[in-house]
Length: 317
Image (spheres, rainbow, N blue to C red):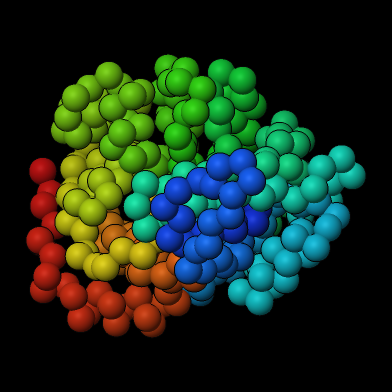
């Protein structure tokens, strides 16, 4: 038995969520807003918190500043049972901060990467990785770190572990086609449909999935409120989303990923993995903050049981 179900590698930062900010103040001006809240942020951190809440044993591997925000994140991880022994402390940068403005509508961000800018898979301690049975990766940035991601995922596979990766938005606009090589080395590959369209050049979800399936045996596309679709071993399965009132979409994709990987590591089929993923994503958007609405296992099961009649049955093709 491994001590951890999953090792998560990637970013952790502070999210300052500013609710109801309709305009940015001009020089010398002040704008009052209904609320501001402080949360743990970063895709890898939010995925870790969501997966730990579901009951799995998690260790986090990242870099934080030697400051109060870094300690806050460590404390929040510990409260959820996440092992922090593999988190390194930066002597050069403070803990990253992201200010999210008006999360109820089109979110805008002001971000300081901080210690997250120092993360490199080339320096990953493989002994720490070997302590888990699965590794989740974030932080792919196209051609600038492509080779280390391919080499690292192959090393992890050689240790007998499974891997997952959420490619994330490419803010450089490169949409590097080397991503297809990386897909072949990763066991479960996550994208949203807009990212998929940019990488493949396809105009429809169906065409994207067909193109991506030539490179990945297990690809999952997040479709927002419409739900999600997965192609596993050539079989395509779609499941619609759950209608909920949306307060804040921050971290919804990370909660979705956690629900899916929870099902995957529990040995569930694709349909059940998608069901868990959609439930976790829906519950996440019901609260401000990326991890506040993430459910524990029993709450997720109750949510599904109460609402399953309101979703379209899964469709396998």
